[in-house]
Image 1 (cartoon, rainbow, N blue to C red):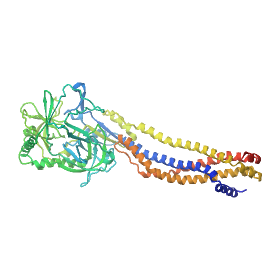
Image 2 (cartoon, one colour; image 1 turned 60 degrees about the horizontal axis):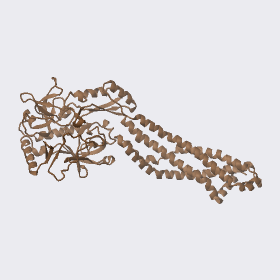
Image 3 (spheres, one colour; image 1 turned 45 degrees about the vertical axis):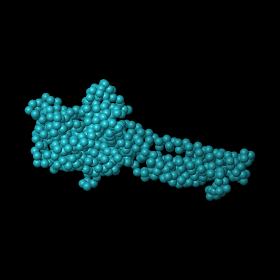
Length: 620
């Protein structure tokens, strides 16, 4: 009997005994279907992980952040340690300078380095990013597009007329509000109190304190692409309450409308002789677009393109110059009544002045590195002091003394709107970009040899281990496929032969040889296996497309919950990645299934062939 007749018989058996046929076809088609979906989605997950997890980690490993310790700790009330920022000090001790940039940039395997120099601007107010909530940014810093790549995968270039890209710092998302609980005065006794702490170790604000703040809830991904307006500069908001130390504690008292109006009038009267009051009072307004979000408690800076940072400073200072009247401003007036930025011929800072010594000499105590509290006195004069946005006070730098502070004598106002671009950039943070993440260890070693004392906290070994574990899934799946295939074929074919003993007996009684019976059952296994394979392949291909969307959603959510908490930039994976079919793996599994089907089917087929006609008929 030739192969054609054998297959005709097998097709008839398929038609007349669909239940028996399905017993072999269904398990194999299910196995093929599952192998198509699992092998494809496993391959897709590996490709997605390579891009989103390992690619993102590799990108972060291309950058190093150097930071100087610009603060000190001292025992506070109740024995608690209180951290304070240093004031003054030698610039090179508390900040990085251009000399550091040149040194680091010249190291092997370093492609770029930049100091994060905070713009000496106060009052950065945002009111329309969150509904009915406003907040102020801690500081702004200029950053090159190349170095911004560690914080955002969006376009960071500045184009005149377009919304300005900004990498915003989430630490600024705090809303300050007043809660006087129906009172006009509140007295809090802090004497001898040991401040309670929150879970993160920060001091807990007493519930009775009338001025409070609360975190603004946000979704990091939803913020990307959001546009908002920011008011830059303008006069400080007049504080609508007073604080006064008393024997009972610190008394907080609300100002009446009349008292607030009086303060506003006094400020206007003091400023108007020297500036157009309405012009200097009104902040500049700019439209920004969020391209990245920083979630780092150790940082307060939000980043804008370097070229816009210089333009912003020029417009900020020019606005003050344009608001000036013809009245002269002496050094004494600047020291006692008006404050602004200070320029000592080298650095532009938001410093203040402290008068001491004889002759009424005005001496600047600067806090290098950006905006912050200024220190002032007025030789016994209790007159109110006002911060003038954009005002630059020129000062004569004097470092030839034994004082731990950089001192500078105020000499008058400086009317140069381009002073920021001319001033040296200093800061306590320096960003470094490597030419290749693989050279990170060599650069870290070079930095430490140069005295920068950098402790590398990257977790690249963890990602390597994770990558190896993910790749091991393919090996495990292959072993499982072979094992299950052998079990399915052996079980189904043995049962098929067992239920076909009467048929075998009839064929043997009619003169069929052992070889014919062997071929008949072997070809039957191959035929049914082929039908099952085609059905499983087609349905598996369709099912792979169906499950691609939920798998993509799960993977995206997983990345946001894990990588999104630690990395600023995540390489996003397109949904199309999960619609791919791994034909290479399917070809390998198909070959394995064919070999297994033939070899394993031989065992029950030989058992069928060795049955005698009498045994076969009696066994039925």
